[in-house]
Length: 197
Ligand SMILES: Nc1ncnc2c1ncn2[C@@H]1O[C@H](COP(=O)(O)OP(=O)(O)OP(=O)(O)O)[C@@H](O)[C@H]1O
Ligand SMILES: Cc1cn([C@H]2C[C@H](O)[C@@H](COP(=O)(O)O)O2)c(=O)[nH]c1=O
Image (cartoon, rainbow, N blue to C red; front, side, top):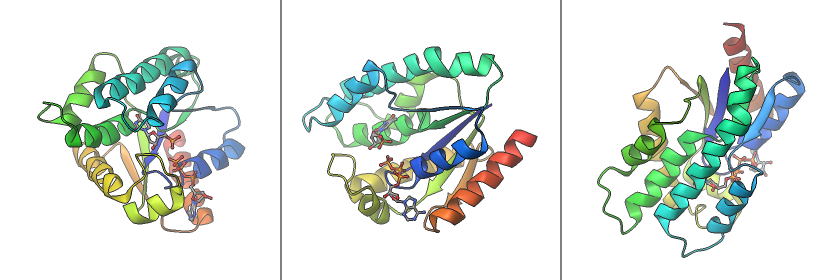
């Protein structure tokens, strides 16, 4: 089973992902961007304020393709529980928002990014969405890269809402304004329910 954690920057994904290690010690824990050289290329693009938005989409997508073939698919084939901190929905939400603001002639960016993945990607079985308003998310993230302004995060959040509306059975929304302890407890209950099914 593939479970993904999604949400805005600073919503608490990594905090939850780390807490889940203690409960599911046999699971495969992974993340995007990955620790591979593809992931390094993504971070290099992220640090460049003039990076081309389409080129950046394809760097993230290359990282995802390698993540799938090197980590996710082999682990699933072994029957592992796979828990990923960010996955394809991050691309749909973030690059969908980036392309909507960019000077590119793509009419429906979110659908375009989904289409790029359709031929090869493997959708998650379940996705936990850590729901946090963009202002708090930007404050918590406390970083200065180009994705962490609250206006941009508001557009990303709207894209997440579209994804949830399109596939409500896959998403599990968790109120990320609660304390870390409450959020972790809620996520652990959701994951326990999912793996017991
Ligand atoms: N529920 C919470 N309430 C308040 N602060 C939190 C909560 N969860 C995490 N934090 C804090 O917010 C910051 C961001 O948390 P974390 O790194 O887990 O988020 P993230 O979603 O993985 O962020 P990013 O996507 O930017 O890597 C950290 O300082 C963390 O301690
Ligand atoms: C996977 C992925 C990530 N992003 C963005 C989201 C963050 O601002 C950065 C780095 O991710 P991290 O979890 O904070 O380390 O990248 C993105 O725009 N598209 C993606 O597919």
